Structure formats: structure tokens, C-alpha cells
Length: 326
Image (cartoon, rainbow, N blue to C red):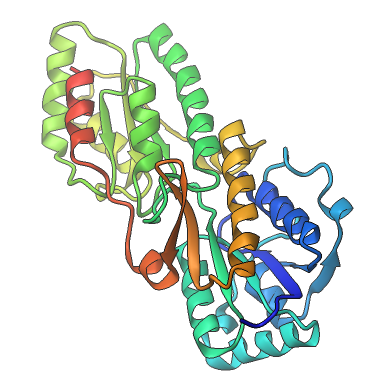
């Protein structure tokens, strides 16, 4: 096994609260093991542009509580091509980097997998995405913070809904995955939760809203993942207003507030644990895997499987939603 001397860390794709905690853990664990640790600015784009710099313990002081990422993040189309990845490799070799930790989602892991296959840089992936849509881990860095932000906002919306006897259709993030919608909807007592994993029967929703009106249940919450097949909250709201004009219907889109803010304790712990485990894995000669936590234990998933597989929603959740909202 080749001796590990220099490692680098980057954040890629959409930002997620807790990424800074993960960077901090990688840097300080690497330094503890007498490794030279480098930070790469703006993800894969920074690899191509050689925006690579040495990090010290003080480089990550006072960041564990901060949202976003001090290393920044960006999309990089050039990295999709072999020539772009070759240029990135050459820049890493200029710094003698022989191990890479990538914090991001499935798109980031896809890049890491190709890069590691083509060149002699072992890669470790850490799941950093608010969507919790990656198989091989019970949660992802940023999910807990994002869903708690959504719950806090929806609770406040419920107060004004109750004051005016209104129906609110609330859109949360989740282009391809409905976990934020599912968890925030159950936690706030939503009557309906619409998400990409399940076909939405709008007629059923209209019928239930009309039944609720007959029994004088005047406050209704519908939580919609942005990727729901109906077309998001705006379209759902339009249909309801058209079919149920007697209801005072409002639409609220929570948007990017779900990405920001200080990470929760849960996300800080998860990120710290995964960052520590990433360096440990590289030192043990384990690479080209995503590190997650399953049943409270560190779990390795090959990067190719992490890219291909998605975290499936247990059908039991849909039954729970229906029963609790009745």
C-alpha cells in the first residue's frame, strides 16, 4: 500500500449545512495523523484552475457552526470531459496530493468515481445534500437542518392559516426526492404530502378538501416537494383555486432558506464523524467508497453503487401520512 502523505478536500454540488463541520473534521484528523491537508476552492472547478492551498488547524477554526461552505462550491462542465479531468489530475500532482475527499451529492460522486478510475488518486465521498437521496446512509449532511428549517417555517404559516381559516399549499425543496416534504409534512400535521416518489391524484385531494369543508375543518396544509409531477405548489394551488373557489387558498414557496443557517447538532455530529472516518479510510487503504452511517455504524458503499442507487421511501410512510391526516 502506497504511503499517504498529502490529501485534499473539496465541496461540490449544492451547498448543505454541515459541510464546514465535515471540512473541519477532515483537516484536523489529517493533521493529527501528520498528513499535509489541502483545500480546493469551488469544487472540481478549483481543481482545473489550480485553486488549491494548504490548510492548517487554524484554517478551520470557528466554522463548525456556520452554514454554507468556506471552500465554496460550483458546477464544472469541463470536468465532465476526460481532458478536463486530466488537467485536474495534473494540478493535484503539482501538490503531490495522493488522496481526495469529496463532500457532495450523487453528481459529485459520479465525477469522483470516473476521476479515480482514470488516475491514481484514491477518492472518498461524503454525502452532503439536503435531499437525503443517496443510498448507503441513514442520513446525509444537511438534511436534518433543512427539514427543521422547513418545519419551523410551516409551523409559522399554520398560525396565520388558523387565524384566517385558510388553505396553504407550501412548497419545499426536493427536485427528485421527497424526504424533506415527507418529514416536514408529518411533523407539521399536513393533510396531504406530494412528492416525486408517489403519483399524485389531484381529484382525491379535491374530494377530501370538499369533505373537510363540509365538516368545518377550515385549516388545511398541503406540503409539496418542488419535483412533484403535478408541477409544484403553484400548479397545485391553481388547480385547487379553480376547483374549490370557495376556499381561501394561498401558496408559499420556502425556497433557498432551507439550504442556509447554522447546522443542527445532528448535522454537526454526522459531518464530524464522517470527516474523521474519511481520513481513517484513506489511511487504511480503503478508497473509492462513500462513507455513511447505517444503524449508527460507519458504512462503506462503493462510489458506483452510491451513484446508481437512490434512497427509497418505505411505502409504510404513505400509510402513516394518510392515517394521521384523517
